[in-house]
Length: 60
Length: 164
Image 1 (cartoon, rainbow over the protein chains, first blue to last red):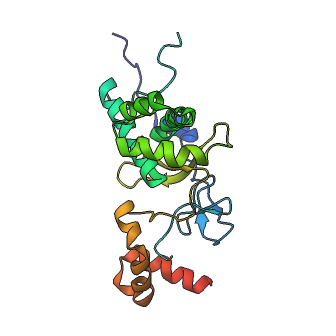
Image 2: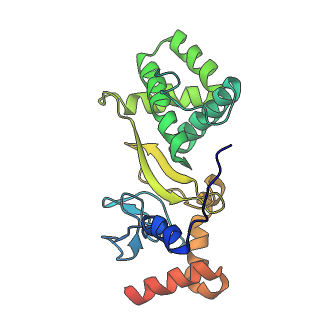
Image 3: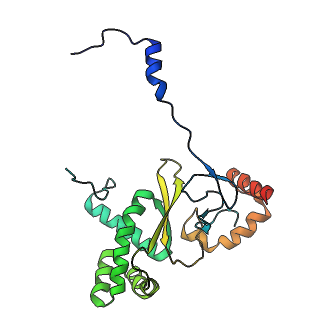
C-alpha cells in the first residue's frame, strides 16, 4: 500500500490550507427598515421583500 | 447519463413523496401562503400550478381528479370555486417563491410560497394559521409590554422603536 514517505511540515500543511478560509456571509441593508438582511431573502426583521410585505413579524 | 437529474427524492419513497406533496398542496390552497424548505417549495410550485390549470378547465372529471390528487375534497373545492376564477386572466405563474433565511436547528434553506394574487392579509410568520387569528390581540399586548416577550423579540422591538 502506498504510504507517505515524509511527515508534512507545519509550513507545508499551512501553505496548503492558505486557500481554505471561509468567506463571511454577504449581507445588505433592508430598503424598508434599514436592518441588515440576507440578499435575495425576505427581511427577517420587517418581513418585506421587493417593497412587498411577505410575512408578518412580532412588531405588527 | 442524465438519470435522476430532474426532480428531487427528498429522502422519501415514492408513496411518501406523493403524500407529502398532497399535504403541502392542500395546506397552500387552504392558507394561500405557507413556509417550507426551499427544495420542497421548488418542487411544489410546478405541481400545484398544473392542478390550478386543471381546476381552470372545470367539469366533473377534473374536479374528481383534483380530489384524488390532493386527497382533500375541501382543497379541491376551493381550487375550483375560488382560486380558478381568480387565476382566469393569468397563463401560468400562479405561485411565487420568496427565500426566507435558514432554519434554526438544521440550517435548511427556507422559503415562503404563496399565490401571486393572494389576498393581502399576511399570515403570522412564526406559528402558522393558529396564531394568525389572534395576531391582532397579540399585537396590542406586545406593544404594551415588550419586556415580557422573549429576549430576541424585545431586542428587535426596541431597535425598531429607536429607529422610528
